[in-house]
Image (cartoon, rainbow, N blue to C red; front, side, top):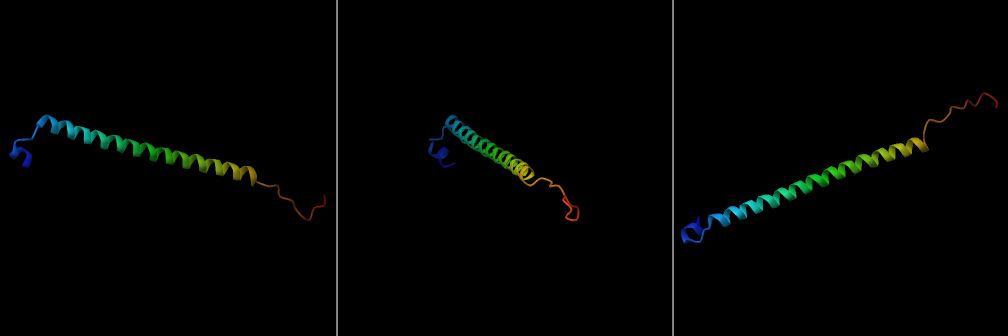
Amino acid sequence: MIFKKLGIFDENYHQKYRAYIRQKRYREYIENVKLDIYAKLFDARLKEKIERLIKEKFGKKEFICPDIPK
């Protein structure tokens, strides 16, 4: 408002600046969403890997009855 009263308000510059700010915020938002998705995928892969390793190392063991002689 004050720029309009002083006569130094340029509508074209104002629109370009607002578009730039919106575009910059949009890019930052997209980048944050992308990083969140990568983090979730990494966590899921890590959990799967841990579960697989646990199954490999501590899988079902054979039950050995101590009463039966070998």
